Length: 297
Image 1 (cartoon, helix red, strand yellow):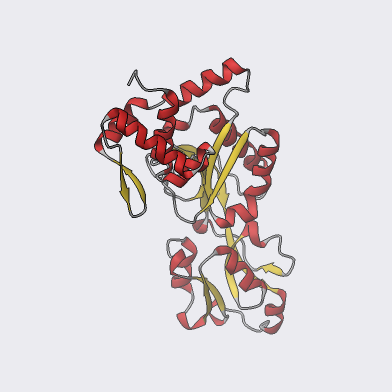
Image 2 (cartoon, rainbow, N blue to C red):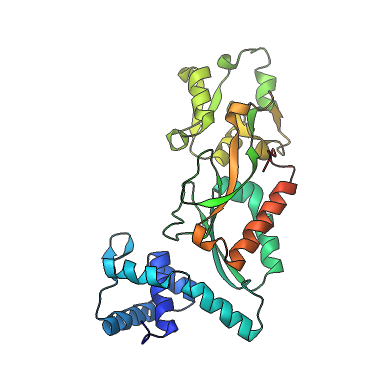
Protein backbone atom coordinates (compact mmCIF):
# COMPACT_ATOMS: atom_id res chain seq x y z
CA UNK A 1 0.00 0.00 0.00
CA UNK A 2 2.82 2.44 0.82
CA UNK A 3 4.04 2.27 -2.81
CA UNK A 4 0.75 3.60 -4.16
CA UNK A 5 -0.02 7.28 -4.59
CA UNK A 6 -3.25 8.91 -3.49
CA UNK A 7 -4.31 9.76 -7.03
CA UNK A 8 -4.48 6.06 -7.93
CA UNK A 9 -6.54 5.30 -4.85
CA UNK A 10 -9.02 8.10 -5.57
CA UNK A 11 -10.03 6.34 -8.78
CA UNK A 12 -10.48 3.03 -6.98
CA UNK A 13 -12.64 4.62 -4.27
CA UNK A 14 -14.75 6.52 -6.80
CA UNK A 15 -15.62 3.33 -8.70
CA UNK A 16 -16.32 1.45 -5.45
CA UNK A 17 -18.69 4.19 -4.26
CA UNK A 18 -20.54 4.89 -7.50
CA UNK A 19 -20.55 1.29 -8.75
CA UNK A 20 -19.79 2.29 -12.34
CA UNK A 21 -17.10 3.84 -14.50
CA UNK A 22 -19.40 6.62 -15.67
CA UNK A 23 -20.40 7.47 -12.09
CA UNK A 24 -16.76 7.62 -11.01
CA UNK A 25 -15.89 9.80 -14.01
CA UNK A 26 -18.64 12.24 -13.11
CA UNK A 27 -17.59 12.35 -9.47
CA UNK A 28 -13.93 13.04 -10.35
CA UNK A 29 -14.74 15.32 -13.29
CA UNK A 30 -12.70 13.26 -15.75
CA UNK A 31 -13.62 11.26 -18.83
CA UNK A 32 -14.61 7.60 -18.98
CA UNK A 33 -11.36 6.42 -20.53
CA UNK A 34 -9.25 8.09 -17.82
CA UNK A 35 -11.02 6.08 -15.11
CA UNK A 36 -10.54 2.82 -17.04
CA UNK A 37 -6.88 3.56 -17.63
CA UNK A 38 -6.11 4.48 -14.02
CA UNK A 39 -8.02 1.48 -12.68
CA UNK A 40 -6.18 -0.90 -15.01
CA UNK A 41 -2.86 0.65 -13.97
CA UNK A 42 -3.69 0.19 -10.28
CA UNK A 43 -4.70 -3.44 -10.74
CA UNK A 44 -1.49 -4.08 -12.67
CA UNK A 45 0.68 -2.56 -9.95
CA UNK A 46 -1.12 -4.58 -7.29
CA UNK A 47 -1.25 -7.70 -9.45
CA UNK A 48 -4.84 -8.10 -8.27
CA UNK A 49 -8.28 -7.88 -9.81
CA UNK A 50 -10.29 -5.33 -7.81
CA UNK A 51 -13.60 -5.27 -9.72
CA UNK A 52 -15.84 -7.57 -11.70
CA UNK A 53 -17.94 -6.26 -14.58
CA UNK A 54 -21.61 -6.97 -13.80
CA UNK A 55 -24.75 -6.37 -15.91
CA UNK A 56 -25.71 -3.38 -13.76
CA UNK A 57 -22.25 -1.94 -13.07
CA UNK A 58 -19.01 -2.84 -11.32
CA UNK A 59 -18.88 -5.10 -8.26
CA UNK A 60 -15.84 -5.50 -6.04
CA UNK A 61 -13.93 -8.73 -5.76
CA UNK A 62 -12.82 -10.05 -2.38
CA UNK A 63 -9.48 -8.30 -2.95
CA UNK A 64 -11.30 -5.08 -3.77
CA UNK A 65 -13.36 -5.32 -0.58
CA UNK A 66 -10.19 -5.85 1.44
CA UNK A 67 -8.60 -2.77 -0.08
CA UNK A 68 -11.68 -0.64 0.55
CA UNK A 69 -11.71 -1.70 4.20
CA UNK A 70 -8.06 -0.68 4.55
CA UNK A 71 -8.81 2.69 2.99
CA UNK A 72 -11.93 3.37 5.05
CA UNK A 73 -11.86 6.97 6.19
CA UNK A 74 -8.53 7.69 4.50
CA UNK A 75 -9.98 9.78 1.69
CA UNK A 76 -11.77 12.19 3.99
CA UNK A 77 -8.66 12.55 6.16
CA UNK A 78 -6.47 13.35 3.16
CA UNK A 79 -8.98 15.76 1.60
CA UNK A 80 -9.43 17.55 4.92
CA UNK A 81 -5.66 17.94 5.29
CA UNK A 82 -5.39 19.24 1.73
CA UNK A 83 -8.12 21.81 2.35
CA UNK A 84 -6.47 23.00 5.55
CA UNK A 85 -3.12 23.42 3.84
CA UNK A 86 -4.65 25.33 0.93
CA UNK A 87 -6.78 27.54 3.18
CA UNK A 88 -10.10 26.31 1.84
CA UNK A 89 -13.23 26.09 3.98
CA UNK A 90 -12.97 22.92 6.06
CA UNK A 91 -15.03 20.28 4.34
CA UNK A 92 -17.45 22.59 2.51
CA UNK A 93 -16.04 21.51 -0.80
CA UNK A 94 -16.73 18.62 -3.15
CA UNK A 95 -19.70 16.60 -4.33
CA UNK A 96 -22.81 15.55 -2.41
CA UNK A 97 -25.19 13.04 -3.96
CA UNK A 98 -28.73 13.45 -2.63
CA UNK A 99 -31.63 11.07 -3.17
CA UNK A 100 -35.29 11.86 -2.56
CA UNK A 101 -38.71 11.31 -4.10
CA UNK A 102 -40.24 13.27 -6.96
CA UNK A 103 -42.97 14.47 -4.59
CA UNK A 104 -40.55 15.89 -2.02
CA UNK A 105 -38.27 17.45 -4.61
CA UNK A 106 -41.14 19.16 -6.43
CA UNK A 107 -43.18 20.22 -3.44
CA UNK A 108 -40.68 20.85 -0.68
CA UNK A 109 -36.92 20.55 -1.07
CA UNK A 110 -35.72 22.34 -4.19
CA UNK A 111 -35.80 25.91 -2.73
CA UNK A 112 -33.74 24.78 0.27
CA UNK A 113 -31.22 22.94 -1.88
CA UNK A 114 -30.88 25.99 -4.10
CA UNK A 115 -30.30 28.20 -1.04
CA UNK A 116 -27.67 25.84 0.37
CA UNK A 117 -25.84 25.76 -2.97
CA UNK A 118 -25.91 29.56 -3.20
CA UNK A 119 -24.29 29.76 0.24
CA UNK A 120 -21.70 27.08 -0.57
CA UNK A 121 -20.51 27.59 -4.12
CA UNK A 122 -17.73 25.00 -3.83
CA UNK A 123 -20.30 22.23 -3.28
CA UNK A 124 -21.36 20.21 -6.31
CA UNK A 125 -24.80 18.62 -5.99
CA UNK A 126 -26.00 15.44 -7.64
CA UNK A 127 -29.73 14.85 -7.17
CA UNK A 128 -31.18 11.38 -7.75
CA UNK A 129 -34.98 11.32 -7.97
CA UNK A 130 -36.05 7.83 -6.95
CA UNK A 131 -39.16 6.61 -5.16
CA UNK A 132 -37.35 3.71 -3.50
CA UNK A 133 -34.37 3.77 -1.14
CA UNK A 134 -31.08 3.94 -2.98
CA UNK A 135 -28.34 2.12 -1.11
CA UNK A 136 -26.38 4.49 1.09
CA UNK A 137 -24.34 1.48 2.19
CA UNK A 138 -23.03 1.05 -1.35
CA UNK A 139 -22.79 4.86 -1.59
CA UNK A 140 -25.32 5.19 -4.39
CA UNK A 141 -26.12 8.38 -2.49
CA UNK A 142 -24.65 10.35 0.40
CA UNK A 143 -27.82 11.87 1.85
CA UNK A 144 -31.41 10.62 1.64
CA UNK A 145 -34.52 12.66 2.41
CA UNK A 146 -37.23 10.03 2.69
CA UNK A 147 -40.80 9.58 3.94
CA UNK A 148 -40.96 6.34 5.89
CA UNK A 149 -42.23 4.97 9.18
CA UNK A 150 -39.55 2.27 9.05
CA UNK A 151 -35.96 3.18 8.11
CA UNK A 152 -33.05 0.84 7.34
CA UNK A 153 -31.12 -0.05 10.49
CA UNK A 154 -27.77 0.68 8.85
CA UNK A 155 -28.52 4.41 8.39
CA UNK A 156 -28.38 7.32 10.81
CA UNK A 157 -30.30 10.57 10.82
CA UNK A 158 -33.10 12.62 12.30
CA UNK A 159 -36.86 12.68 11.94
CA UNK A 160 -37.76 16.19 10.87
CA UNK A 161 -41.55 16.03 10.97
CA UNK A 162 -44.56 14.23 9.57
CA UNK A 163 -46.31 14.31 6.23
CA UNK A 164 -50.08 14.39 6.66
CA UNK A 165 -52.83 13.26 4.29
CA UNK A 166 -56.50 14.19 3.98
CA UNK A 167 -59.41 13.82 1.58
CA UNK A 168 -59.72 16.49 -1.12
CA UNK A 169 -61.91 17.21 -4.12
CA UNK A 170 -62.02 19.91 -6.76
CA UNK A 171 -64.66 22.65 -6.53
CA UNK A 172 -66.00 21.57 -9.89
CA UNK A 173 -66.41 17.96 -8.82
CA UNK A 174 -68.19 18.94 -5.60
CA UNK A 175 -70.62 21.16 -7.47
CA UNK A 176 -71.62 18.26 -9.71
CA UNK A 177 -71.86 15.76 -6.85
CA UNK A 178 -73.17 17.88 -3.97
CA UNK A 179 -75.97 15.40 -3.14
CA UNK A 180 -73.58 12.52 -2.40
CA UNK A 181 -72.98 12.28 1.35
CA UNK A 182 -71.14 8.98 1.82
CA UNK A 183 -67.48 8.48 0.82
CA UNK A 184 -68.37 5.23 -0.92
CA UNK A 185 -70.85 7.01 -3.20
CA UNK A 186 -68.17 9.14 -4.85
CA UNK A 187 -65.69 8.48 -7.63
CA UNK A 188 -62.13 8.20 -6.32
CA UNK A 189 -58.59 8.78 -7.47
CA UNK A 190 -56.50 5.98 -5.96
CA UNK A 191 -52.81 5.01 -5.73
CA UNK A 192 -51.91 2.10 -8.00
CA UNK A 193 -49.79 -0.96 -7.20
CA UNK A 194 -46.56 1.05 -7.37
CA UNK A 195 -47.78 2.83 -4.21
CA UNK A 196 -49.23 -0.25 -2.53
CA UNK A 197 -46.94 0.23 0.49
CA UNK A 198 -48.63 3.51 1.46
CA UNK A 199 -51.13 3.79 4.30
CA UNK A 200 -53.42 5.62 1.87
CA UNK A 201 -53.67 2.47 -0.25
CA UNK A 202 -54.70 0.37 2.75
CA UNK A 203 -57.32 2.95 3.73
CA UNK A 204 -58.78 2.93 0.22
CA UNK A 205 -59.04 -0.84 0.16
CA UNK A 206 -60.87 -0.88 3.48
CA UNK A 207 -63.22 2.07 2.92
CA UNK A 208 -63.95 2.40 -0.79
CA UNK A 209 -65.60 -0.21 -3.06
CA UNK A 210 -63.41 -1.15 -6.00
CA UNK A 211 -66.14 -0.14 -8.46
CA UNK A 212 -65.88 3.45 -7.21
CA UNK A 213 -62.21 3.75 -8.24
CA UNK A 214 -62.31 6.01 -11.29
CA UNK A 215 -58.56 6.17 -11.89
CA UNK A 216 -55.37 4.79 -10.38
CA UNK A 217 -52.15 6.82 -10.51
CA UNK A 218 -48.58 5.72 -9.81
CA UNK A 219 -47.31 9.00 -8.31
CA UNK A 220 -48.62 11.27 -5.56
CA UNK A 221 -48.09 14.29 -7.79
CA UNK A 222 -50.20 12.61 -10.46
CA UNK A 223 -52.97 11.99 -7.95
CA UNK A 224 -53.12 15.71 -7.13
CA UNK A 225 -53.44 16.52 -10.83
CA UNK A 226 -56.23 13.97 -11.31
CA UNK A 227 -58.22 15.29 -8.33
CA UNK A 228 -57.66 18.88 -9.46
CA UNK A 229 -59.19 18.00 -12.80
CA UNK A 230 -62.37 16.59 -11.29
CA UNK A 231 -61.78 12.88 -11.67
CA UNK A 232 -62.89 12.14 -8.12
CA UNK A 233 -62.03 12.47 -4.45
CA UNK A 234 -58.52 11.59 -3.35
CA UNK A 235 -56.39 11.05 -0.28
CA UNK A 236 -53.67 13.62 -0.94
CA UNK A 237 -50.62 14.91 0.87
CA UNK A 238 -51.64 18.11 2.62
CA UNK A 239 -48.42 19.95 1.78
CA UNK A 240 -49.21 19.46 -1.91
CA UNK A 241 -52.96 19.91 -1.90
CA UNK A 242 -53.43 22.81 0.52
CA UNK A 243 -51.83 25.26 -1.89
CA UNK A 244 -54.10 24.24 -4.77
CA UNK A 245 -56.73 26.97 -5.08
CA UNK A 246 -59.20 24.67 -6.86
CA UNK A 247 -59.07 21.95 -4.21
CA UNK A 248 -61.18 21.70 -1.05
CA UNK A 249 -60.18 19.68 2.01
CA UNK A 250 -63.18 17.57 3.06
CA UNK A 251 -61.88 16.11 6.33
CA UNK A 252 -59.12 16.67 8.85
CA UNK A 253 -55.92 14.63 8.43
CA UNK A 254 -56.09 11.18 9.98
CA UNK A 255 -53.20 10.28 12.29
CA UNK A 256 -53.03 6.71 10.97
CA UNK A 257 -52.08 8.09 7.56
CA UNK A 258 -49.14 10.17 8.86
CA UNK A 259 -45.68 9.37 7.49
CA UNK A 260 -42.44 10.40 9.18
CA UNK A 261 -39.95 12.44 7.14
CA UNK A 262 -36.27 11.59 7.69
CA UNK A 263 -32.92 13.08 6.74
CA UNK A 264 -30.51 10.15 6.57
CA UNK A 265 -26.92 9.30 5.80
CA UNK A 266 -24.50 6.43 6.27
CA UNK A 267 -22.68 6.28 9.64
CA UNK A 268 -19.31 6.57 7.88
CA UNK A 269 -20.36 9.94 6.42
CA UNK A 270 -22.03 11.66 9.35
CA UNK A 271 -18.79 13.38 10.44
CA UNK A 272 -17.83 14.61 6.97
CA UNK A 273 -18.12 18.39 7.11
CA UNK A 274 -19.98 18.96 3.83
CA UNK A 275 -22.48 16.18 4.64
CA UNK A 276 -23.08 17.49 8.16
CA UNK A 277 -23.47 21.03 6.83
CA UNK A 278 -26.18 19.96 4.37
CA UNK A 279 -28.10 17.71 6.76
CA UNK A 280 -28.05 20.35 9.51
CA UNK A 281 -29.17 23.02 7.04
CA UNK A 282 -32.08 20.92 5.75
CA UNK A 283 -33.11 19.94 9.27
CA UNK A 284 -33.22 23.56 10.45
CA UNK A 285 -35.15 24.72 7.38
CA UNK A 286 -37.70 21.92 7.52
CA UNK A 287 -38.21 22.22 11.27
CA UNK A 288 -38.94 25.94 10.79
CA UNK A 289 -41.38 25.30 7.94
CA UNK A 290 -45.11 25.22 8.54
CA UNK A 291 -45.45 22.83 5.60
CA UNK A 292 -44.89 19.79 7.82
CA UNK A 293 -46.63 18.57 10.93
CA UNK A 294 -43.90 18.81 13.54
CA UNK A 295 -43.53 16.00 16.00
CA UNK A 296 -41.01 16.01 18.83
CA UNK A 297 -37.42 15.49 17.56
